[in-house]
Length: 291
Image 1: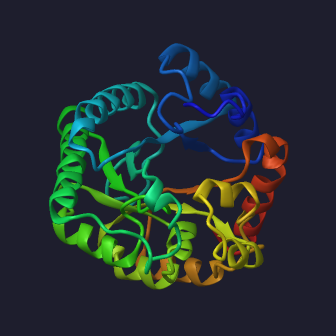
Image 2 (image 1 turned 90 degrees about the vertical axis):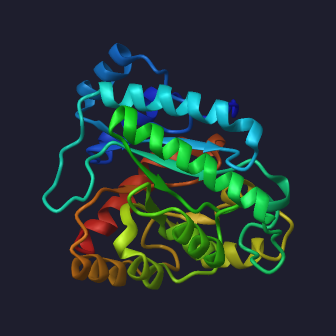
């Protein structure tokens, strides 16, 4: 993990536990040490489990497949060596999952949230990306029994509605599921409630976040990278933004969704001193909303 401003991983575990969470994700490759005894003990001390690992890398380049599969091996070997999270009734696939996101393309990063001006992949590049995702998913499931879930992400080559539709057509549910993120769906111009409903049959895992409407409207008028928009506060604690969480709660109840949901607070890590308060506020709001 290259960002020198990220908080220590032990602090993240401390704050997750203090905010009342029972688990969290491993984080981007290289953030937490892949040391079973060290991380396992730290999780046990705080009553936490790991619900997912993450591939957050260039999924488009054919030259990157070896690196992607190396990360897949290391992450899946690590997360499956830890005590597994609780499995709930009607949950389609057991956690931990492997969340797969495309990242690393300036031309798309600066077009995050702007479907009309974002370049699309050529057919050959799209097919390469799909092949890389399939290879990750097949390795994760075939070798480690880990379910891969594809996450559309602002600033990557799977972000907008047409790309989500195409991906769902090209990768069948027996190969990989979806991890839909309410904040990224809204950032990309989709209605989170409608999109969650439309892809309910593919939905294995969910991320929650919220968007500050005033900041969002401002950054859409700027030439700005996605995480730079996060640094100026486009993502806010859940319940203080533009996403309709009571409607999402009603929908997930209707769907009988029984999988895991991870709450994220994407922000400038140099201001992460306030992360605990934000996480606690998000959790309190969701509890009041019936989650």
